[in-house]
Length: 123
Image (cartoon, rainbow, N blue to C red; front, side, top):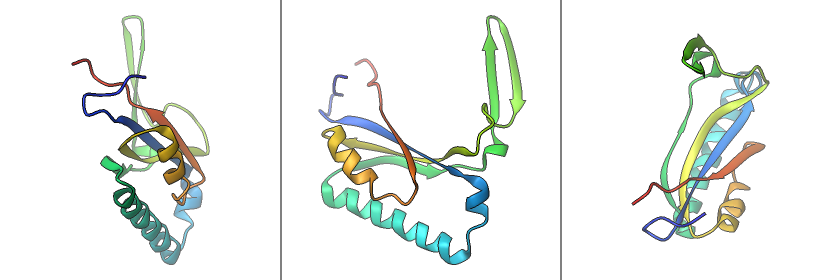
């Protein structure tokens, strides 16, 4: 991967979890989770890692999936895959290298975080 014009790499941290388990959490557990995310964002600033975006996503059942096969296009309600773990949110970070992002991602409260480099747009 080559770097963008500001000489840092961008990484998407994709946060997966079980929506049924999330729905079963108490208000205190949700509050604690939110506090841990706030500490994560503060840690990014302390480490000089820029957060370029990030949000919690609506429940997977609210998704619309577009599938293309040749010239045929179908649009269906719901997520693409039937699975217990679904994409629940993301962060978009700019960091010097993957090792920094891996170290920081360990601080997130969720158990499954997929980290992907962002392909820079051509100049």
